[in-house]
Amino acid sequence: MHEIEPITGPGVVRGTLPFSAGVRAGDFIFISGMASADETGAIIHDDFENEARRTYQNIGRVLQAAGVDFTRVVQVRCYLQRQEDWDAHNRIYREFFREPYPARTTLVGCLGTLVKYEVDCIAYAPKDSQV
Image (cartoon, rainbow, N blue to C red; front, side, top):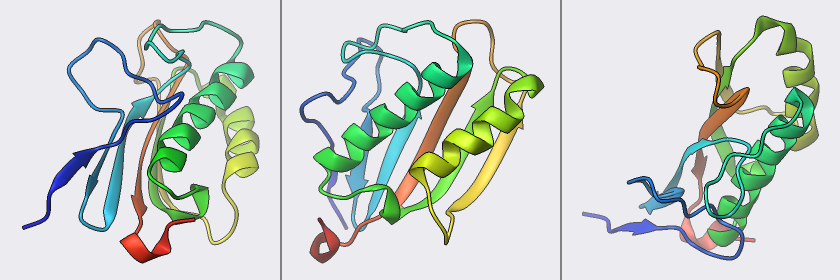
């Protein structure tokens, strides 16, 4: 049985809610739903594009703390508040992910009014693959 290790480090969101920003379980890294938040977990309200980029920057900090980068992500789940942000979502997504793209699910209209965008993901990261 593999140990489950929380992922922590500089800039990794460490809010007051009962969840880890990320955990390593064996060769996989599971990253909780990230949004436009600061290190303490406080939501930073902004336009969609800035919230989306901040969301991916938060994911990047968890990946970095785990010793990997976006190229190791194998699955992404995206949640959009509004259909009108679909094109911007895909454009910004391409700033962080390249071909071959991870498997992806995108749900629209599922968020309340707190955030415009949220993303969770899974990375495959055998110990010998760290950057």
